[in-house]
Amino acid sequence: NAGVTQTPKFRVLKTGQSMTLLCAQDMNHEYMYWYRQDPGMGLRLIHYSVGEGTTAKGEVPDGYNVSRLKKQNFLLGLESAAPSQTSVYFCASRSTGKREQYFGPGTRLTVT
Amino acid sequence: GNSVTQMEGPVTLSEEAFLTINCTYTATGYPSLFWYVQYPGEGLQLLLKATKADDKGSNKGFEATYRKETTSFHLEKGSVQVSDSAVYFCALSDGYSGAGSYQLTFGKGTKLSVIP
Image 1 (spheres, rainbow over the protein chains, first blue to last red):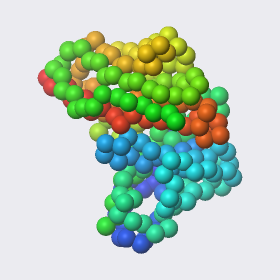
Image 2 (cartoon, rainbow over the protein chains, first blue to last red):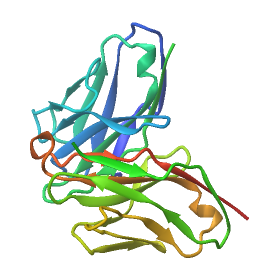
Image 3 (cartoon, rainbow over the protein chains, first blue to last red):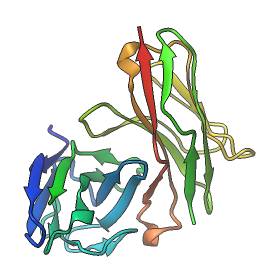
Image 4 (cartoon, rainbow over the protein chains, first blue to last red):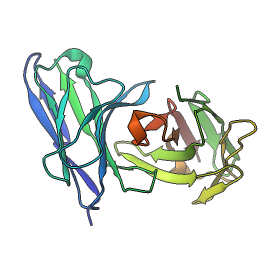
């Protein structure tokens, strides 16, 4: 039981490049979330999904897109990366009826 | 909207000292409250939780009590160890944001360093 996994662990992009971050969970959780963590800011919600085929915007959605084609996977896309998107990205999931979320190990992204 | 305020760090303690990290919150409705811990280079791990007023969450020697009257959820540990060095996040979840998605609202985190 791997829990929540994220790919890749590290990535460096140039401004304007695109990439996709993959989150996978093997706990059969309905809900999945993408956060970014910046120094002194805590974690801020980017997008979330309440089930397969659904997505919704969080607190800081601009510049990101997401897809949830399979229940176990939640993809975060950056179409045209900007230096302001340099951050550590965390994926999380939770089950229906529970409020606690379980987090992946994170992806450290640097945009130059 | 919801918000969580926790004491700013960093906090440096000697081994076996008593730890308190203050956390207060503002929320609509009746939130659940959490403490998460982040060790260097890792993701967040759930440390403890409380789902209703007067509940006490506890784990690994850490405790926190859900105080509705003071809207607080302070984290305590009686005797810290070097291995407790990490960043601690207070968070809340209620059903009044994000169309019932029970989003987590986090404090900014408190970095704890424990020296031998």
